[in-house]
Length: 146
Image (cartoon, rainbow, N blue to C red; front, top):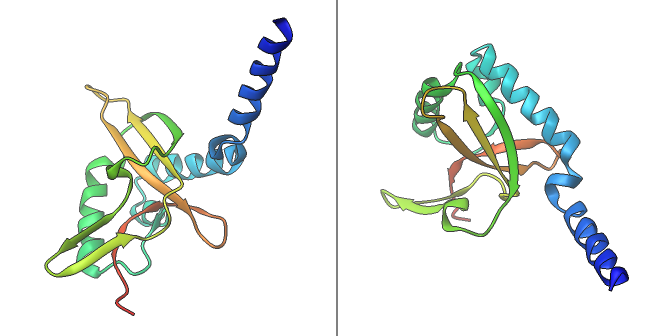
């Protein structure tokens, strides 16, 4: 019986050790530090650099900048990451004014940012990795019709 429990504990550890958050912990910590630095300095360009914006239309970029202006500079309490569950809000797929939109990167993880403000404002971001192995926050971009 003790061996069986020990085996279950070992298997549970190995399964959790294989998760993306465990495997990528160092690079996720670096991404968190970049987010904190851009946020603390209220540097819109640095913050935008954390987003996968290739293919983003100018009007959508302006909307993103406006949205960021409401959160940038708020004191961050915690940043954490979790595996995606497959919930609909984790994907980007919609149509607006006859244009189909999709994710700028394949979603890999969800980043939770809890701000140290009254009511603990929380933002959730889907993040993915670029071909250069950089973590980026995913945006909605028009799908290529080709």
